[in-house]
Structure formats: structure tokens, C-alpha cells
Length: 198
Image (tube, rainbow, N blue to C red; front, side, top):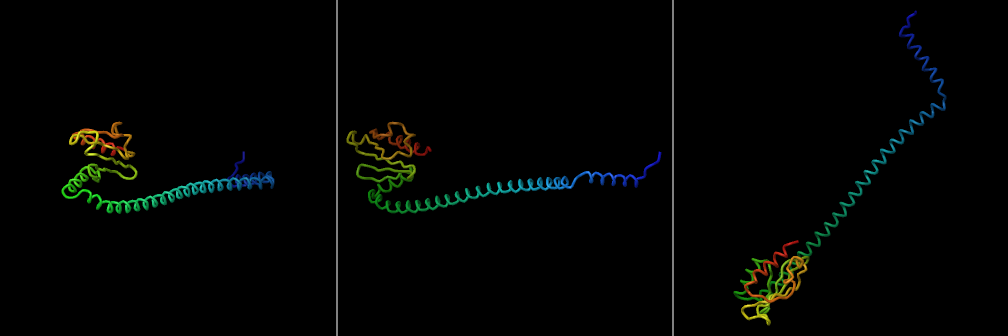
């Protein structure tokens, strides 16, 4: 048997590939090329679509952030305005409150406000009390000489606005009551505790 050399083998391979190419018609070759091009185009389209979807999601997040920034800026402006109005109201109210409580009584009222956080305005035998803010107000009146109680022993309590804490108060503190003066610290403690709960 004759031995085939590498050169002869390479020539045979070339002839075989040429014959294989002859077997494939020109339309078949174009179809294969078009299929490859279509697959590549579809892959690029999917990549572009994925990038566009990602950009759309980023754009949506940026718009949300922009809206939140505007809302925050509006809230800051409102808070600054309210703070300025509150400062002006406090300045305007201080002389009237001080005028109602003069002398040593004014110092007692100031000390009471410092300890409890409750602002007191005296009107004869009636004390108008308030604490909290516009969102959670707590206002009430204490009559130091109620008509239906014993003088020097009883005082009366009348809630005027407990909307900030009424859900945390016992039922008897949601309406006007008369009680012994010795119970006043307990009443104040319950009011302030209910006001601190959110």
C-alpha cells in the first residue's frame, strides 16, 4: 500500500471543501449570511431595548427624586414660615400674659411654665392653660373658685381642645369635672403623659 504524504492529504482536503462549496447554491449561501445578520441584529436590538428600559427606570427614579426635592423644599418653606409666625405670636402674647400676672405671681407663672411646658394665662380666678402645637394642641381651663365646689378646697377642670391626646385620656378627663385641689398634680400628670404619647 502506498503511503499518503501530508501534502497530498492537504490537497485532498482542499478539493473536498471546494466540492462541498459547489454543492451549496448561491441562494443558500445568501440565506445563511442573511440568517447570521438577522441573528446579530436581533441580539443588538435586545441589548438596546434592555438599555432603554434601564434608562427609563432611571429617569422615573430621577423624576421621583425631583418631586420629593420640591416637596421637601415646600415643607421647609412652610416650616420656616410657621416658625416665624409662631415667634411673632409668642412675642405678641408675652406682654398680654405678663400684664395679667404681675409681681410675684408672674414669677410663679413663669416657673410653672418652665417646669411643665404648659403656658398659663390668668383671668381672675380662671387659668387658661395650653401646650403643644397646631398639630397636637392641648388646651384647658382651671377654675380656682368653682361655683359648684367648696371654696379653698375644690377646683374645676374644663377641657377646651384635647384633640391631640383625647384618645389617651381617661373618660373623666374628657369632660368638665370638679375635684379636690390635692388631686391637681395627678390631673396635670395624666394630661401631660397623654399629650406625650403619639
